[in-house]
Image (tube, rainbow, N blue to C red; front, side, top):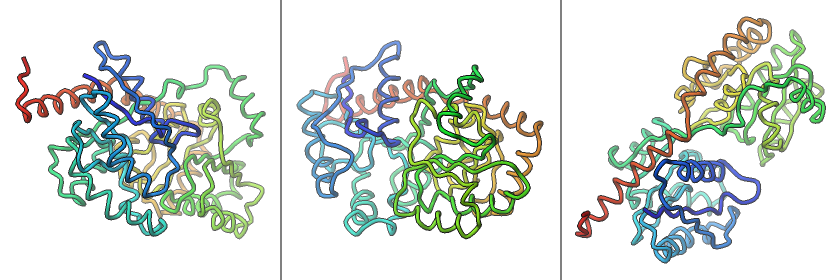
Length: 366
């Protein structure tokens, strides 16, 4: 089979879609019997106007896949073309745009809340990263559950325990990291629960030497967070970093006292998984898909339970035994997520979709 992928999201500073696409393509190519991969590159970038995005999804990508004689068009963005002569497999990373559409400008709000859900039923098959997203998808679109498969992503091999302490400490020195810190890594959005994190840290900061390091792109939401930090008198203890190079992330996780993630909604929750793989104890919310990722290997709390997060941070920071316990559980848990397993599952989905398409158009499989 020839599988066509849109690679626009893999350019530049990659978002989650770009990371997912690159990793899945690599894993498919490493299968014992790999499919032929066709990369559709029309020069588009991830930063497009809404009208440009719609035109590209509806016309450009299906036509490129047809011209490439692809058997499957796998889109790892969000919307599906309403008409495509090439069967479409669509990865729905999450439903953030649908569930939180009011946070977007008017044109984007139309795209997420009206246009996108309308297109989903046109896909030959849908893949989600978690059972929670699948349940939301069935509830919001009435798509039959049999047309949706759950295929969790794997984890890049660089996310693992740091064997060389000198290497980790070199990263600490270069990034000017505190000697002890709690860590948060993700975009600065209201749904991420960073307000809960800052409020919880404010309750325990006077009892602990830890600082708080928050890594994430500053969107429109960062100003209220800065104001919250100033109001709590934590300006010297809370550190915001727009961007950390991918190569430095494993050491950043490894050196943290704990990774704290009070997110209110995640389609999957990759950063807690990365943190566990690198040996960071995880304190996370019990919302949406996060229990599927963290399981029993971390401390799970209601996303707005400020006191609960404060107590958990204090408990982990105050006990070597608790940190070692959570570190061991997290490392073991992270090993359950494999890109090889994800690629094998995707290959089976492609085969099933291809077989159905051939049967629909009366093509003899023999």
